Amino acid sequence: MNRAEGGRLLARYFDGDLPAEEQRQLFEALASDQELYNAFAEEALLAEMLRDPGFRAKVAAAVQPRVGRSLPFLRGWHARWQLAGAMALILLLVSALYFYRANHRAEGNLAKGGAPPAAERPIPAMLTVVLLPTERSQSGGVHQVVLGDQQTVRLEMDPGAGSYSSYRATLVSLDTTMQRDFDGLKSGPGEGGLNRLAVELPSHMLPSGDYTLTVSGVTTAGAVEPVAGYSFSIMRKR
Amino acid sequence: MDSTGGRDALLEKVRVRILGFATYLGCGNDAEDIAQETMVVLHTRYADAASLEDLLKLGPRICSNLALNWRRHKSNPARAVELPESMPDASERDPESALSAKQLQELLLEAIRKSDDRCKEILRLRLEGARTKEIADRLRLRTGAVDTAYFRCLQRLRNALGGSR
Image 1 (tube, rainbow over the protein chains, first blue to last red):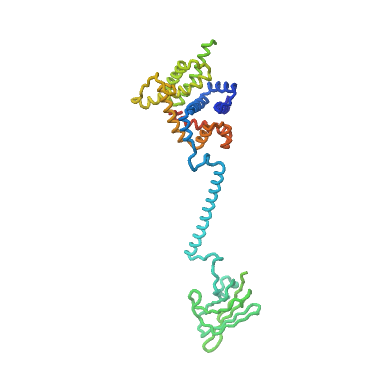
Image 2: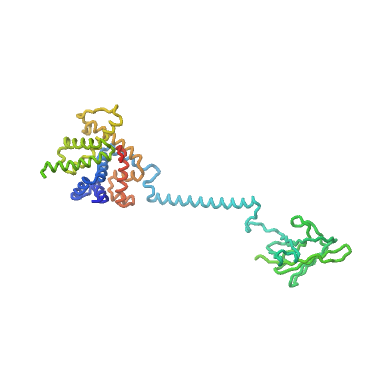
């Protein structure tokens, strides 16, 4: 008889449902298997002591589940409620962590002077664009101006080293459907505090397309001298 | 083999198991003496117990009482009191056996209180009269798992008897 089989017979013996023949087999096994006999002896001692009503009552009190706790505690509807509660708590913690991190990131961006996300960024009423003369454009190409919902576009240019009483500018679309002249322009502080010439026009006058801006200087004698030319493209955000 | 030889062989089988149990209870070098004393008690007080089954059933109680008594004497010999053998208590046990049983109960009770929830649950169901199969159903375990858990529980309670393996 192996150990597992002996253990099963032992359990059935103490359950009181072991037939006489199997009982005889069990006791033969007990006589030859010390570990099985030790297990038998322990249970027999406990069973004998439990026949004492006083002791039985004390044991019964000692093995009662503690108040507020189900034994085994992972069983039945208690377990399901505990599981649901645990999941709700985890969800709450994850949500709290997510919102905390989102807020923390936004605060960090503001503290660092970083731009808030595009969706939260207020749209300025005016778009200022600093134009470089065509021959000085770093990319060698056309300056791309992306126009959003701004109402006004301000184009700023370097007035150059010449000394003119005023400036004149002409803005023409490449398809010549739009032309606008600006006279009597004076240089003044512009973007970044630098000396600039500036023209402003409503954004609706600048549909998507390519443009050229020609700047001339007007001398005190009234002569008009070319100063610089600029090319740029307007792209509309959808 | 004659009947005397058969009886001697039977007693020797029982003695070996009792010796093993006394060792299991942690009696060490004195296990042999305790086993011998157990056999003397079996012979003198339970002379009518003749079958292997009877002897194996009686052995643990006598042996554990003697082992506990031995432990008590050993741990505090100055306070050990020789109790008169002829003075039975209400349960008709001799005073030393009664004292041992009481002490054993207290130790076991303490061990049960300290045992884990699974052990307590199985003991509670056993006290309610549940059989292994019923316990397995109620705890949603296989019967083999209940047996294993229960015997592990008893093994831990064994420490209450002062045993060490």
